[in-house]
Image 1 (cartoon, rainbow, N blue to C red):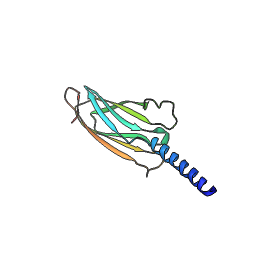
Image 2: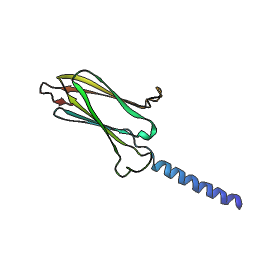
Image 3: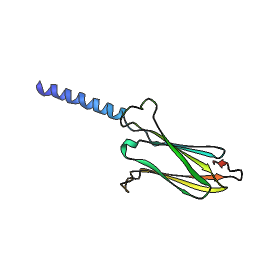
Image 4: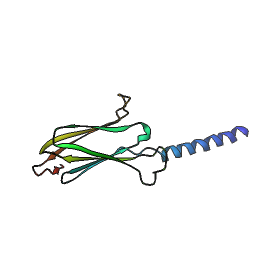
Length: 132
């Protein structure tokens, strides 16, 4: 009887752990891109508490980095370990095509690359972004 009692307790605890493990599972990485005239916004899902961060490189001269802003997922602003999004802002500086490559990794661990995304953006003669 004592063994059956503990078996039920262990099963109950395991079910709670499984439930909460699934409930707090990290959101999948998502991204979005939008342009308005000479302004470009690229939004990337991130969780800085994991040590992972987005870095970027620009190949081409038509785009210039302007800013990066982090926003916690709504409703989780005060929760330790919760994720959010980084929004990167770029400005068109001359006509042409550039590639912006983002890498989601831990800066101290070269083997930790979680994801790589490359956007090819075109700036027309009016210095407006053209997203295809």
